[in-house]
Image (cartoon, rainbow, N blue to C red; front, side):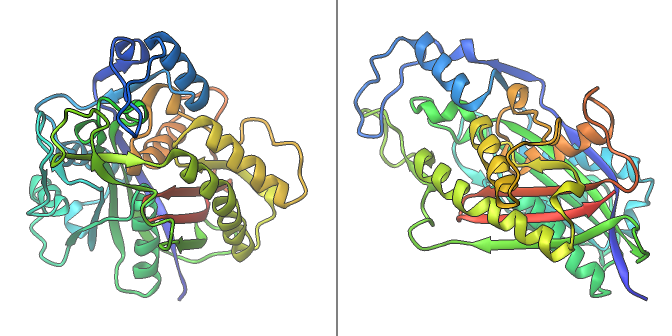
Length: 358
């Protein structure tokens, strides 16, 4: 009997530390070439907010790590699904930097974060395979796509996919782009269900990697501050290049996913897009609808939490989906039969999209 991959539970962990834009007003910023940016701090912050939409972001507490947040999100997703964690076949954790202890920049990914989560959940079943995935910001969604492949191949029946990141530990405080990044974790339980007409589940997916001139649009590099230790590396982003790449490639991948699913754009209830940058996300969805000859967007089609939570990389989509699914917004809701589109873009450069019926 054909199988369908259904999301049966979600959960997220939003860190407690709020970092507002005003907290950066006194910060000294430098350009890529090492020259100080002379504009007043308030002007820099206001321009940043106008472009990104970010008013504040969340940072993990000093004693908390990426795997700690992943554990909390996992517990909530498991409770929401009602499964026995011993019945999980796979436990996938998407991240980019492992555990980075507060006040250090050294990544710790041995054992894998997935192994740490499995240990903390006290899962003894050796057939629950725990592993990490590195795929840039689209990592959580790629874990969902891998789960779908394993379930439809009959290899797995239940999986837990987590996205977790503490980007606050790898940012260059002297780089304006550092204000974009934040911390958080989101998780989902996926289960095999018999396929049925118009039933819930993953309908189609699309994945691409562009690794020629795009490969290093997001990478590690030295601080913008000239006096900084050049051997200490931080996350760096070619903002304009990333924006242009996303505008060109992401809408096409989203359309490819919908076309594979046989879903017209008019049938999409919500688009859950990686919370990278408000202007960029708005541009992506406008171009998606333009590919269908549509000039106007449906009202409330694209939920956003970047304004208060910032860009938490692999955690943005699962946290956003969990918040909408559990009714955190009056203007956003989901019900059985609704069709949603997930899409993400990030370091690699990688793109993916998933069409899903609730």
